[in-house]
Length: 432
Image 1 (spheres, rainbow, N blue to C red):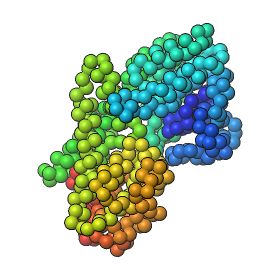
Image 2 (image 1 turned 60 degrees about the vertical axis):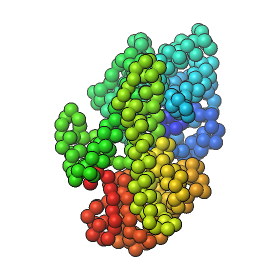
Image 3 (image 1 turned 90 degrees about the horizontal axis):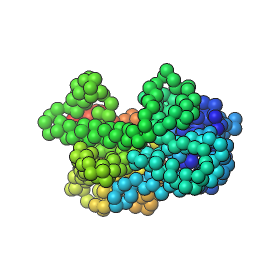
Image 4 (image 1 turned 30 degrees about the horizontal axis):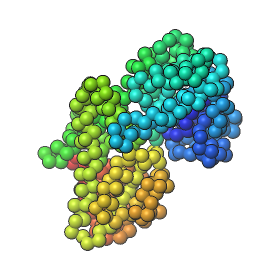
């Protein structure tokens, strides 16, 4: 099958690589000429575990191509997948649909023969209707159908999730489009649940899923706060909760708050959509406010640790919103860093993969370390903000020797509290 994918970000690129690996001919389209040249040269423009090798193999065998030309990517495609960004509006927090609408307007010109236009971007309910109108107005005689094909790719595990999905949701309002997508996803039949629903239901499933997971994360974080005061251990509590099959054990890890390119954006967009329909989603509204406040409280924990140390130096381990990715969008770590900077803190930061992305945001406001040990040299407190497993394997004896004052605020619970305290650290973590 010939597939055109509009957008080469954290959704579009892994999706393109995945379909190429399954044997389809894929052309990824992006209007960023420099980015396309980099991709054509055989270099992936994002970090994802396992992506580089599979990406390069499919570029070399010719199944994965890149272009800035919408005509080239669309005119022979059986399926065109829209995977452009839907960033939040800076004031209302609703999804900004300009890139979706621009893509629909442009692709309409080049449709040839019957084409399924699939929206993989996370979009408000009713977007499929809008795309259909845009294409129909532009090309009244075009033979096409618009479907919703929500993505459920976790950053850092995108390829794993592509090939081993929990479920595949296809929102198609007619059998003709459904048959094309049934053929596209034939390799997954019998391996996962493939759910065929109406287009608006499909668009809602993505938002409802992410909002529910965000609520689960915020709930366990509030339970962690309770455990700290009550003398309980959040991990023992979470294990006891997770054994209940109605609850499950996933997304019960305490931390500094949810973040990334999906949960903050999608919870805000879900709440906005509900208000437009006259529905008040009290749980989601409360979670949004509570999660924002939590990051400020986490920053205060770090500041409290060094409040009596003049010109205190703070070492930061972790800038990406989670391990396995270089993405800093809506990263709790970056938000905590921003809060610390607002209080005049002096920071030296380090991350395994996200340094360049973080530098685009932070500029010269912080010092950039070259390693974990370089970050902590002369520091008065070490704050661990991203759950890279390598941080948990640090030589604490060496770390203590390098630090000016042995303070650790571990917001990812990566280190052993007993080991840290036995070595003389003043050690804080979450929920214990």
